[in-house]
Length: 284
Ligand SMILES: NC(=O)c1ccc[n+]([C@@H]2O[C@H](COP(=O)([O-])OP(=O)(O)OC[C@H]3O[C@@H](n4cnc5c(N)ncnc54)[C@H](OP(=O)(O)O)[C@@H]3O)[C@@H](O)[C@H]2O)c1
View 1 (cartoon, rainbow, N blue to C red):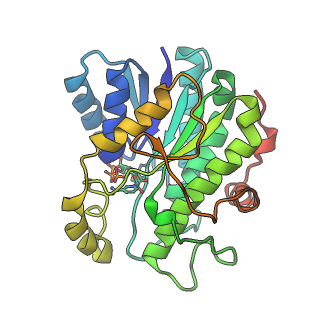
View 2 (view 1 turned 120 degrees about the vertical axis):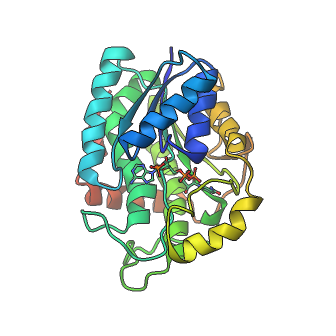
């Protein structure tokens, strides 16, 4: 049985993706922010897929030490239950912020959760992905188009603009996927970004201020999260690695011209420095 890890699997897009993959016979490891939400999500999936092999771990992925703690737990799980193979990692957990707020590492929260958490978690799981020839899938957004990376101040600490920070974090999803492909496609790993479209979830309701205000008007126009779940399912279950980078509604889509090898490598090296790691050390 193939194992898939889904972060942010306690609500919205992540929950419906975990449910659909469980329906299609995958072994699911869900990751959530709190034990209580993990227990609720597990119950919800079991109510539609009784006896699904599903296990949840709770971790606050905004914090570097929590991602590393989770990585160690997941490594132990994969070694014991999955022959050391990880078929797919879905880096989906994300947030939107109205104000400049930082993690305990001093990083802006949208950059930390939407980009760095997936970057560091992928690093901890790389041996298992290499072993399986696995897939890494980020939940991106159409909003990456027109965005840029603010290299002199990636945390946007000097002139904070919440939407600019969100869009930058979603551009980083594509740059990270591009860099993973540049480095590891030859070793059997493929990375993708899913554009879920506008989805009716509670992402904006979990924040106060402008994000909450704006989301009240946008949310009703969103599609149900089961719709983007189909694209994750498609990318996970395709027999051969699909060839593209950016997918929506199970189809390859064009993405921003800001995504290229040079920028991808620059972000990769910066992210390594911010996480205090070097991917190069990891071998199958
Ligand atoms: N909704 C849209 O229209 C839309 C459009 C484009 C992209 N996206 C992207 O889709 C992804 C999923 O968002 P969603 O709309 O499904 O929202 P959501 O329902 O709020 O799901 C977000 C998930 O991330 C988890 N999470 C939040 N903070 C966390 C933390 N510090 N540590 C660990 N997990 C944490 C949440 O846990 P809790 O349940 O405990 O809060 C939840 O499981 C995000 O990356 C978002 O940027 C969404």
